[in-house]
Amino acid sequence: MLWLDISTFTGDYENMAQTNFDNNPRRTAFLIVAAVFCLFCVGCGVSKHPPVEFRYQQEETVKDLQAKNFSYPQTRFVVLSDPHYYHPSLGTSGPDFEAYIRDDRKMLAKSDEILDAAIERVRREKADFILICGDLTKDGEKINHRYIAEKIANLHPSADLYVVPGNHDVANGISRRYTKDRTEPVASVSPEEFKRIYADYGYASCLDADAASLSYVAEPVPGLWVLALDSCLWRENDPGKHPVTDGRFPGQTLKWIEKVLIRARQQEKAVLSFMHHGLMEHYPSNEKYYGQYVVDNSDTLTRLFAAYGVRLVFTGHFHAQDITAKNPEQHTSRVFDVETGSLVTYPCPYRTVAFSGDGTCTIESRFIQSIDSVDTGFPDYARDFAFRGTVELADKALEGYWVSEKGRKILAPQIAEAYVAHLEGNENRPEQVLKAKGTGLMGRIVVFSQKDLVRGWWTDLWPADNRLTIDFKDGSISSDTRH
Ligand SMILES: [Fe+2]
Ligand SMILES: [Fe+2]
Image (cartoon, rainbow, N blue to C red):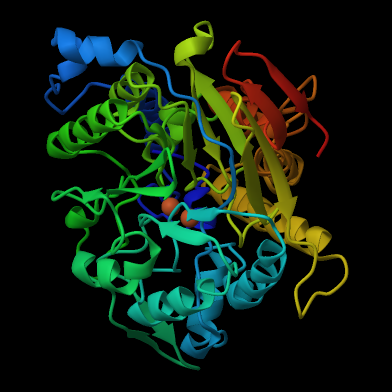
């Protein structure tokens, strides 16, 4: 049970805070203790899935293949994530839409304009191909999929485009349109329709596809395979309900991934991957508080990637600019998870990635600076949108825990600062992450039980998040930690 639900920013609702405490102080105390206990249990990480036996763990011929090392060929590409496209014709006014926006602080009403601004910027980039890490639509509406599929054809005059689904994109039970006084369901897409709509963006031209998911592998430039992974659980979505936020790969897909990686080794191809869910934690306590943002098979998949030389995985989902790595001591098998923030959430980024061809990779970040309706000061507008939204959400959650108005006024902006700092990347943690002075007894209880989440958002795991060069040969990194 979580008290502050950032899923309202990403549009994921499984963790909505239960704040309806009744007036019985004993019951309240019990629920607080139970909530704290639950937080610890969430972090226990008991696996519900049987282990998959991989060939690299058992077969000598496959172990021999692992010893070979292929470096990424010279190329340059762009990465975007979470555009959450919402066509204005589905309605951007009326009480129902306003209520939705109040609980969901993405700049959905401006997603069309923001995508136009991104297209204008990305067209000018030198890029051989483009990756979009899922959550293409607000809530899987077929009409939004059709609109965005048409629009992204203009993203670049010559680069190939590859997409994967996000948790919002397929068989979504809450695809809706809004009129002045009503909310009406609209059609979502089946997995087959998703493949048809995005046929030109990976599915038609791929080298191979997984029968158990919407995953595929493609070769955008000679010598480089892009492993596009569908980490979503659309099979578990129910009509009328919010889609499942969590991500996981079934055993069949893990086996298919290994089959592809073996083929890549045999054919001397270097491999990078992209998917919607985080491959690994992006801040301390990420798994404990927001485990649905890290794929369930995190360790298994990271080991599999490390075994076959997949050094880079591009992800989205949490809407933050964050790069993190596993196996940091063993630079020859280190795997980097490069998370890109959402186009419709501050700081509205995209990334450029350049492989030099001699073993280095330079990642840079660009940010949307203006849109048609906010032509000056858009970064401030977007930051304010995210900050004020978080203050309101935090205030509502704290009120549910009987924190006084004075206490809420002290705590909510501190929580919002931490969250926005994490969205930006290169967080610079203050000496004290959450000051409890003046917040009263309930405020201090909340600070005591939740400060590791806020401390986590303020903690930037190695390496830098927005601009860096990785030398895969010796493991060195040079970075620029300015915002
Ligand atoms: Fe998202
Ligand atoms: Fe997502």
